Length: 148
Ligand SMILES: [Zn+2]
Image (tube, rainbow, N blue to C red):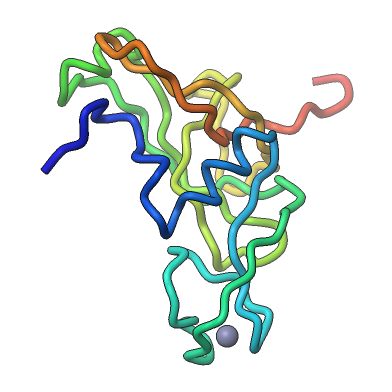
């Protein structure tokens, strides 16, 4: 069943609550395993590396690289119609590039995107037409390079 403000994320959903709470403070946070220290994403125990059940949320650098992306040009639900086109990307995190976040890529024209380009986290309100509430969310933007 969809919650009231779909497609906004349910920030009270227990496994991801700290992810959204950290984002509201301007911090990119995901859990790591207390047994082997690997990042655990999606944030539900057990750890995929060692089977450990203890998770602790840590602050990340917010740096990563663009692993892959799609340019969304079609409104598959009416709530996204006024955002088109936008870019949904997979970002490989600096702390562990095998951990990839599904996110929105901002501040870059789709044609300028390149595989493996350095990106950094920015926090922007996630908003959808017809929904009053917004949710601060981690999105990623290209790292500015000198002279570019
Ligand atoms: Zn582990």
